[in-house]
Image (cartoon, rainbow, N blue to C red; front, side, top):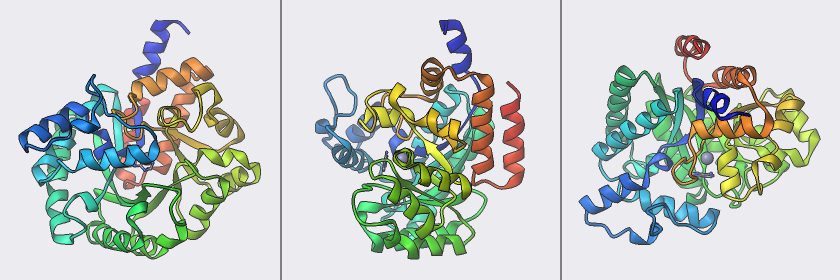
Length: 334
Ligand code: ADE
Ligand code: ZN
């Protein structure tokens, strides 16, 4: 594909469903906060200034170290603006971001409300200035355990509404089971929240099936390893589950050696609902524009396929229907 054509595709309007809030923090932003707060974080950066980690588990600990300098509601408000500037620079018109009350007041509902208020205020201002709509998915962290997740779910339930629209789980998939978090998911569902969880990024098809059967999620973060068992792939189709696929993240973390060996195209061709996201863009040296360009280059995806991907994303988005319709109109205006 010639560079001009790739550039055209990279600039299409986009919806992104899988974007970790703290994972969207550029290294310069975190370095700036660390120096303001006189915290030495030098060990989490490479000499060129990028984040330094060896593997997925080390990534999670570097992520938590970076997050440790986000201390006040104002810090989170500043991050919201930075995140939305990056969305706008990548033509993203709608994004859902995973926010963890564990990092915003330690799971205390009163503190969480203050952080959320600051985030929402910054998001509203950015929506007015930059035209990007953001919604929040409260996210528990698997390796922090099921008890902490209960407090997170209660924070989610207490603040469920127009802005906090979903509940999810990230963290180390190799620890415990999806069913350990059933209480938290039931609590979130009863509060009217829509549900997603990370599964099938590191573990295989059984984990993906457990996510659907044990937690009742309508979306799955990643889910790509489901390709190892076609019966489970078909189960996802039957249950109308949407995958939040993050190809660049999967390649950077070594889930697949290269994009041409990534199963997104096979899953799409078989009829699975797939969408495209960045996960933690500065950690994985990616952007939404790059994801689109790379998919076009590798699989020959054109405007029509990206339009389908965005429609799938908006069908599966957790926002209310008025917002969904307004965003659909923006996405059609190519
Ligand atoms: N938290 C941030 N990024 C993550 C990922 N890719 N998988 C699981 N948890 C995460
Ligand atoms: Zn993720």
